[in-house]
Image 1 (spheres, rainbow, N blue to C red):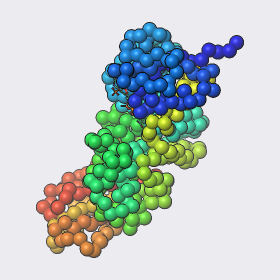
Image 2: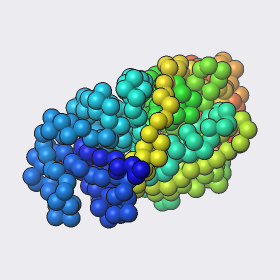
Image 3: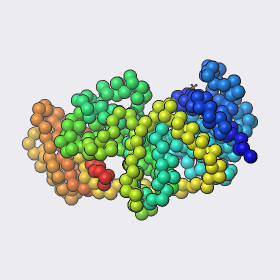
Image 4: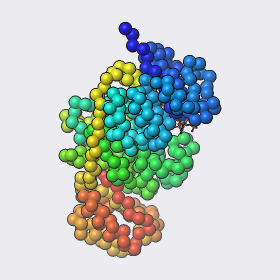
Length: 421
Ligand SMILES: NC(=O)c1ccc[n+]([C@@H]2O[C@H](COP(=O)([O-])OP(=O)(O)OC[C@H]3O[C@@H](n4cnc5c(N)ncnc54)[C@H](OP(=O)(O)O)[C@@H]3O)[C@@H](O)[C@H]2O)c1
């Protein structure tokens, strides 16, 4: 006997929701498996379009939507509430949920996964990380046979656009951010992107998929890309590197090193080569080595593909095993080499003072770089140091930051080599 199509209610008719409806309407061959029954949005009258078939009910009543008993609810409203309350309600009444909402998952994934399992249904979220890149399917199904060790990636298109554009020219961040806003790559307030919260939330979801552990976003150290200046790219180039916002999590026994922030990466690595707003993620496994996934990390149509793919997999396997993410604990990263950039009012003895403070923490210098042509009252120079613990470095930098010669606060970036070490 033929299985009836999955009856789908769409919550939110914005950038992603509109594109989901478009795909379902423009691909009638999917109609045997997926039937869009409802579109819900506040003030829905202004959202109506003529290309959605008359069979679809437009509503701004969430109660009417749930009364129709959909088989699956697509949540593309965003934000913690009321989206969270609607996702819980859908799962509780046995509907599967497909969501693109990384913030909701980062905050509540264990509870929502448990709720889905308790009610014999599923929560799917391919669109929540790296937009249209089939990363979650790839890790969950394609790499299920490996013991994964590390996930590292460029998960925020806005930051990558800003840093890769700065690397290509000689512009400062403010000018590039203005350009990103003009092109629609950055919001009026880009803080969540450039300060690492967006990538951090995606990292929580990825850690859940890769390691079946829930890391608290609040426990993941996040460093902003704001202090990165044009001079840093010049120095990075001399080291064969460039700078990208990296999100990474790696296992260490039952603990996890997780971190988001700007890092030096080799120019020839998948991270260094990744330009514009694209995402790239490298997964390292004990048996399979490294696999990279890359593609558009955002945008309505690309993200909608991930949502529709989740709906299709719901129609293929209605009985998935429930999944749980017990809490995982985040610890400090392993010893790494670092890039330290100072901008100083130049006078004799500065280098000796910095070297002595580093030596007091047992940190060895690797190289000192100073480019000509900068003014003496704001002179940037770089010291790279051999691998050291983050706590050692922090103690040394706390001491160095108290010296009176700084024109800007010192900047430290980890140097991540490929394969990321
Ligand atoms: N855009 C992307 O490229 C992308 C990529 C990956 C993941 N995501 C995720 O996808 C989700 C949706 O993003 P989006 O870009 O599509 O956002 P969006 O364009 O702002 O769309 C959200 C829609 O939900 C509606 N909505 C918001 N709050 C509501 C409420 N309380 N009651 C009823 N309707 C409400 C909005 O209505 P109004 O028009 O009235 O505001 C809008 O139509 C977010 O979780 C986002 O993080 C987006």
